[in-house]
Amino acid sequence: MLNYLIIINVITFVFYGIDKFLAVKHYYRISEKLLYLFSILGGALGSLFGMLLFRHKTLKLKFYLINIISLGLWGMLLWK
Image (tube, rainbow, N blue to C red; front, side, top):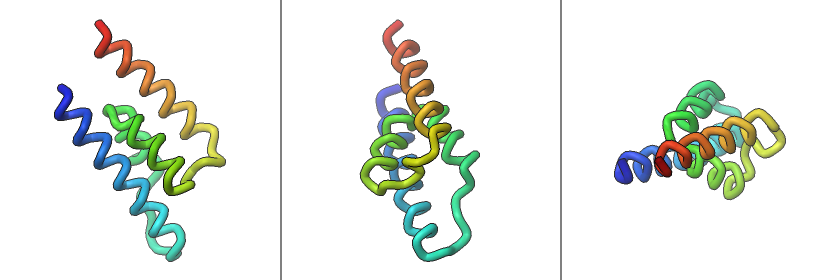
């Protein structure tokens, strides 16, 4: 389970970096639904780090809410 979470968080973090790069260059972007999905599937921590480091999606409250709720749910799941 730990390996899965590390991989999904790294992938999510990288996707935020790629999406920020694409946004700056005005290219076709990664969909918000895909970013939400990766967060829900366990990449919430990578998503939050990506948001802060790349300063991407930081003005959208929905991203914070989904990431924090997802992080909390995964925390409860792992806490058992």
